[in-house]
Length: 201
Length: 201
DNA sequence: CCTACCGATCGGTAGG
DNA sequence: CCTACCGATCGGTAGG
Image (cartoon, rainbow over all chains, first blue to last red; front, side):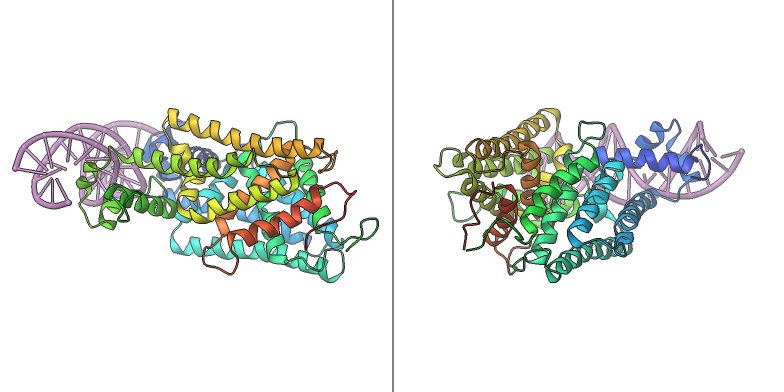
């Protein structure tokens, strides 16, 4: 990444992301991957240690992207509803910018070895916790409805932003920010406390 | 299914659903499957024609379950918001009752042969259309907000009900109906027009 | 980065 | 439903 020309290793990872996302990890052979890059199967091993290293690297990079996008938001001084909207924007942005590795991340992580598998599980929990805490904070400060279940609300938000990997197409009419804002508009109306206008019964 | 004792073929399909959902289609060998059932690899072929037949059958059964649950709702005389709630209940019910085959359905359909692949794609479009039309109808009748985009709203609903396959655990504290109603409560508040107050509870 | 090769395992079949 | 086997392909390595 320090060079403008991608290293062979980066090229291999890019091709692996695309092939793993299209065909799946086990259905992609090292020879498929090599021929994408115009080399012989055995030649890959001059650049990588093995097939699983590719999967681990792709998944790790994806999770680091989500981390960088979301956890830096923790200290940003925004009210909970606006912070949730911004989190959704960033989350969908990461998905949209990394459709291949996001797909690999969501579909192939169960094929990781136990150590890497455990890391992903832990990471997943931390993302869940991020959204739950954000929503709980919004309930405490009166921004969100007091009868909201933070766990369920977090699942709903995560559904919306994660499921995008199945249908979002970069280059289409909607940018990631449009999608996030449209979703946030619908969701926030359902989560927010009723301040003015609508009455309770 | 007519017998109380499942046929060998049904047992094979059940085991295949579980193994394919846990390990993935390509990472499950026919010998893995056979040993689950206490037989030798070659013996499976007395009951099935090949590995892909299993995948096709699992995916077809899953999509038929969704069809039966949702398309019978079309003619039920309910206002759009209540119909959407009922659709979400049924949709999540199908996911919850078939966690294994639902997971196979969402993860492994890209490994189908072109013909079966095309069928799934068409089916998927019809489910999208079902939700879009339901939401468009709700907009027309004034139940849902006029500024709603039916396509985006349908994606949001589908995200919520589909993503459940990744986190829902049967036997946990929340039944499928609880999950659906909690999601519907949050979503419908965001979709409904504001002329009428919330009217549940 | 290539050629040539390794043992292991794959889906599937023949014959009983 | 089993035993024994098939050709094909897999991930990975040795030696250059």
